[in-house]
Image 1 (tube, rainbow, N blue to C red):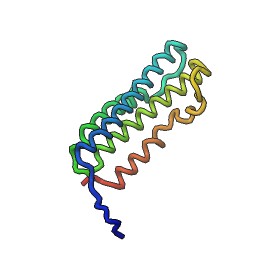
Image 2 (cartoon, helix red, strand yellow):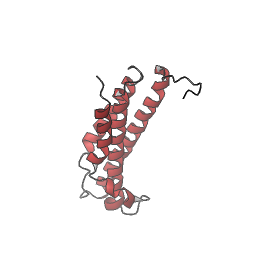
Image 3 (cartoon, rainbow, N blue to C red):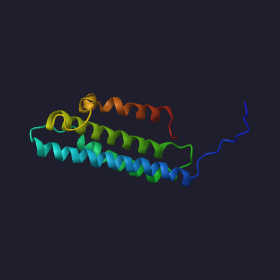
Image 4 (tube, rainbow, N blue to C red):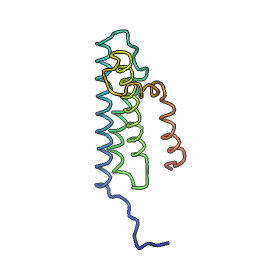
Length: 142
C-alpha cells in the first residue's frame, strides 16, 4: 500500500535538537527535585529523604547528556542514544515527583498544588524503569 511518500530517516541535525531538548528537560527536573530536597530539609529536618535521590540525579544528568551526545552520531535506526535520553528523563521525573510529594505532603502540607497526586510515585522506580528496559530487550543493538 504505497501512498507515494518515501520514508526517510532523520538526519543527524534533525536528531540533535530533540535529544538536547530531552536533556534540558531532564536536567531542569533534576535541579527542581534537588531544590525541593533542600527546601524540605530546611523546613522540617526530620522529613525522610527520597531514597534514590542521588542515583536518580546522577542518572538524570549523566544518561540524558550522554544520550544527547550519542543519539545524532549513531545510524538513525539505532536506538541506543534515545534509550539513554529516555532513562535520564525517567530518572528525572522520579526524582522530581518523589521530592515534590515529600515536600507537599510532609515538609509543608498544602504548600504546592496536587501534592497528594504524586504520592504513589514514591518508591515506584522499578515500575517506571521497566518499560525502558523492555524496549532495550525487544530491540537489541547488535
